[in-house]
Image (cartoon, rainbow, N blue to C red):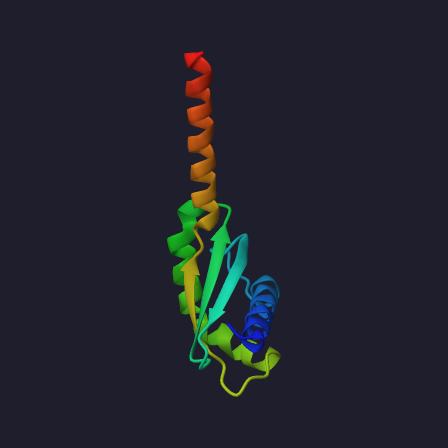
Length: 117
């Protein structure tokens, strides 16, 4: 990935966090973190990965974000100066959940090993 694209991803991520925190007043969204933005080299599309404290709400939050995509993109276009503002594709970042699952499995194995001694 080029340095320019990394900078664009970082700036889009930063601005999306501000937009979601300051511009959107929707109770469906709640506590959300934009964990990563992956923009295509041609700037056609930006995959926006988000995480939630309450994993059970991810479908509702994704649906809400998808519904507000045009509004979010309009504000983003004003804050990030690019020839073309990429289309936003929201995806749940389940890497945190995956890490927690692995950690729990390791702890279970340790407990089983301790009981076997």
